[in-house]
Length: 155
Image (cartoon, rainbow, N blue to C red; front, side):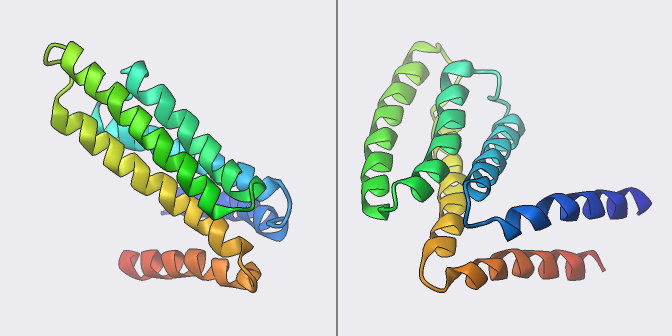
């Protein structure tokens, strides 16, 4: 219990400056870092984090799209880029699945693609909500809602 409290306090000390400077470049970089860590953790849970031909493009996308979301300032163009990147990745993924000789199954590959697309979209959504008019306070509800549900689930 003490270890969890200390970890929470350290994370809070890191999170507060990021929230304060959310209108600067610090926030999208922090979001991109969190997206990359979440991508790594999910691929590790699926057991395919060591398959670099699959993992490295997903890590790159998890870093690139949150940064594009902030610095391009046009969600329509980011969505178009994401669509093209997704199609290209699926083609590469099909080739890897076919030539892996059973080492990577179709279910593993498509599950990885779907889950990581969901993770990247969620982190980009946080940036999008932050950048809409009035979003400087609204995006905090995402974090507060998650914290409240986690705290009450714990108790």
